[in-house]
Image (tube, rainbow, N blue to C red):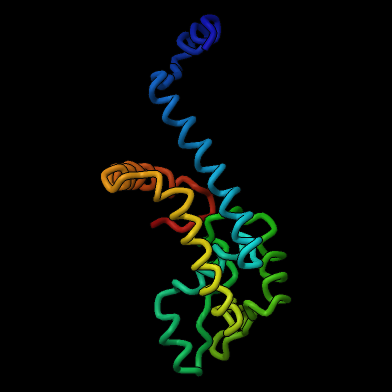
Length: 182
């Protein structure tokens, strides 16, 4: 930071801190690696399973809905999530999410359903084809994670990284606007 800017901020009672060079390097390596891995895994998932990572994210959220399997087995109540709940849970941007669900529905992976007990809501429900696609995509995605991430780290590295990322997630996840606060 330039001295004039630092001086001006200090005079106004606001001081900006700067991480040490080592912490800046750690940030840059994390940021660069995360973005590169997302790009690589997205391209491979699209090539090998026929769906982009954004669709995979939505399918995972639907599959992981608490009680989803029990609801589906009852066949009285469709399992799924309301559109706004699904939008809050996805890891990708909510921008254009309605169009994403439109395309997923056109592909037969999800279906929009109005529950009998709440005609104002629209649930997004995983179809049988969506479940099959999800299982196929999961195999490819996990292979990509192993190939591009896990195999490059020792078990001790994974444990250390997990602990560090849990701390960051605890801080950062609640700061994301429009996201679930877990």
